[in-house]
Every structure is written in structure tokens, then in C-alpha cells.
Image (cartoon, rainbow, N blue to C red; front, side):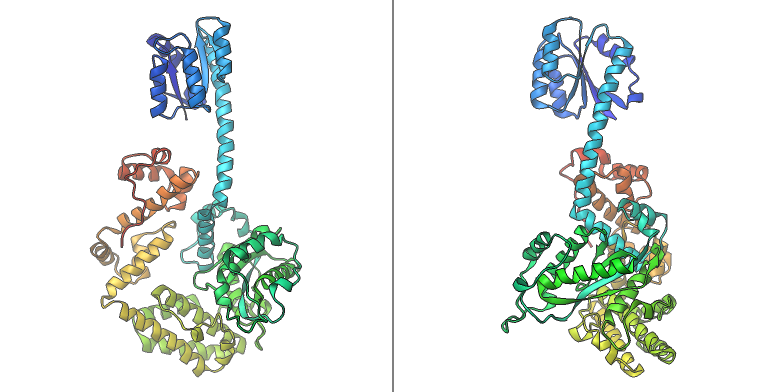
Length: 566
């Protein structure tokens, strides 16, 4: 709705104007009245007004002076002039001060409606243009990039069941059509130092604009010369420029691939490409040239098996990770060798291992790991290697969640040669059980209260997944607790109920979106986990005493949009 103020010294005239127009049909609303120019200016200073309908012959401050003040102080304000004096002086003043129309008293209803339609059309066009510009700024913002990447990681990890919410969120991030495409995941990282000349003497052959990429490199770090014996730079020290190059590459590439980083594997970058063998090969070579030219390290690049549909993205992602780990190995490492779609580690077994390890049941954990390794070893070498990698990825994820820092010798994803060294059941079991013991020791050392540790994990899960559907029963089942007991435990440890905490987390993010982005209330409700815009607005009003729109136009200083203190 656009907000209207009527200015006339005669109350009957103001009332007559309000009765003559069908305001609702034009999405207009009369929100203020004034009897002279001074009152009108005071009203403009305290309220947001889109359109003013004003008389010209008024006491205290006449229409001409009022128009001039509006033109100077509120250049975007729309004005319709109404007067009973058919005088060129008034018409000229109105035109000079950008009045949209000039009507004579008594104003006919059809003339008034025609003038209002004209102004409404201008306001609509202006608002649409601003919304388009704001949408572009939003899609270029770092916050949008972070939220989109978080959503992609969610899809490839399948932490929650996919549904309608995922489809709507995919549309917001311009990913909906990717659900229908046949795609391949591509994983990029460093395995060993590239030998050869320094970046300054390396020829660059790529179809992209390397000027932009070189800017990204200089913003992060300058690649060192591998020919210089004093150079101690290693790939892990070039993560920032490496990541920036990958993002710039994806942004500038004509194929418009999606790019993301999984926090569990900070040294790797991942791309999602339309499946096309020839185009993918070209993409890989261009990317390899750009990275090695600037950083003097040869990147290892793998492509996973082609898949279609969000529900298959996890398989495509895992196949790319596995292929990356097996590049240049005797086992193979190409997507075809791992494309039989049979997971070496089933979800049921993965949940059993997670439950055993979280409960400290190390003996059962060891027995389960050995049983799975033995079955895979008997089946084939490929299946055995796949299982070792998938078990490692599972434990690595658990270590990350528990805050366990793995040593360089324990990180298979940066030491793929170690995978081939684990060529017997005993060796693989020893390595994996060692990681399990490390996770168990860290968990026990962190707290003597296992329930407090569980609550901290639950809070972390809520903070990371507030935008998705969450309920107490689902969370209780996740941590294997009775729902009623979990509810009481949560309230006693956190100091507020589960619903209160989730709502506070969502509201903190909602306020940030209201203030910093042009998103609609529907989009904000969707992005922050509320079921719909109406529920979000009513909840917001109850919590803060103002509507979301009021917050957006003039955020009160009392707002504390920080996340709940844990």
C-alpha cells in the first residue's frame, strides 16, 4: 500500500476527497491530514508518505511555499495540486516543483481517479525498478553467497529429509532447475608441489579473464617460487587465494557452475557441472591452468559419477571425494570404477557406528568396523578401498563436530597415498579404531556431564539448521532420548524451552535479513524456518511490539539481533 496525505484548510474538502476515490483498488491508503503547509511538513518529517494531495490557497504557509519546501526536502515525493483558483501562477508553481497533476475545484471523481492511477503507475514502476536493483545487490552480497553455499552443503550431506521446503529454497537461490539436470561433482585440491618455473614466467592459457583472478590472488597471498630453495610455502598456506581463484573462476565461466566449500574439508573446493564429458574436460584443463599458473602448485582434480536430482547429490559428491582420494593410484580413481551405485557403507551401519561411538561403546565399535572391513575385503579391492574412505569420512565428520584436531598423518583427504597403505583388514581397522578412540577421549575430556555435552551438540545443530523444519521429537530421536525427558533436560540446561530457543535463533537471523536485505516477508520467513509470512509477522509483533515492516523502515536501537547466549 502507498501512503497518502491530504492537505487542505477546510475539513469538509478533506473528507470529500477521501470519499470520492476508491483508494483500496489503487492500493492507496490515506494515513495523514494537515490544514496548512507547516503542519504538512511536520507530518512528512515524522511519517513515511508517498503521495500528497494539496490545496494551494492555505493559511500560515501557502501552497507555493509548501511545494518549494517539498521539492527541496523530499524530491521523490509525488504531489497532486488541487485549487479553486484557475490561475497560471499556481499551475506554473506546481509544474516547477514537479507536481504530477493540477486539478480544479470542485474535483470530479473520474478526474481524481485518473490522476491517482497515473501516480500509482509511476510509484509501481519506481518500486519495481528499486526491487530489481535491490535483488541484484542481494544476490551479489556475501550473506546471500554464504546462505546459498550452506544450502548446497545441506543437500550433499542430507542432514534433514528433503521436501517442499528444499524446493522452495532452491528456487530462492536460483537452483531449482538443477534438480532436473544431470550433473557431475568436481573436487579440486593440492596433493604435491608443482615443479617448474615461477608464476611470473609461466604462460597463462585460459579462456577466462585472468585479470580478475590475479586480483583475487594478490588479495590473498602471492605465490612463491618453487625454484627458490628458501621458499617454505606449502599448499595449506595458500588456501585463501586458492579458494578465491576457484570462486572467481566459477563466477566468470560461461557454463555457470555452482561452487562450494565443505567445512569438513577446508583444503578442497567443489564444483557442480552440467554433465558433459567434453565440456567437463575443457573445464578441468582451464581450471588447472589458472590455479597452477598463479600458485605454482599442480592441483589434483577429480570428477564423480553423473547423477540427477537433489536426492542423489550426496552420492555424486561422495563419488567425487572418493575419486579425488584415489587419483593416480593403482586402484584407479575414475568415476566409472565407482559408479555401481552400491554404497560400501550403508546408512544403517553408519548410524550404528555413530551411536556406538557416541555412547563410548568402543568394543562394539571395533567389532562393527572389523565386520564391515572383512566383508568388503572378501568382495573386492575396489569395495574395500571405498569402505575405508567412507568410514574415514564418517569419523572425520564426527571428529569435526566434537572439535577433535586430526594430525597430518591422520588426514586421508590430504594424504591419499595412505589409503593404499591400508591394504589389509588389520591395518585399516587399526587406523580407524585409533580415530574412534581419539574422538571418544576428546568427548570424555570435554565434560564430565554427558547430558551437557549432548545439549551443546543439540544447540550447535539448531544453530546450523534453524532454517529447516525442526521439532523436539526429531531432535530427541537424533540424540536417542525420550521426548519428554529431553524437553525437561533442554529447559534446565539452556534456561528456556526448545521452542523459545529455536524462535530466538530464527528471529535474530530474521532481523538481520530485514535490516540488511530487500527480501520480502515471505522469503525471510522461508529462509529463517517459519512456516509462513503471517505466522512470522504475528510472532515478531508479540516478541518486539512492532511489525517486521516497521522494524525494516526504522530499526529500534533496543533490538538485539545477536544469537541467544549459550
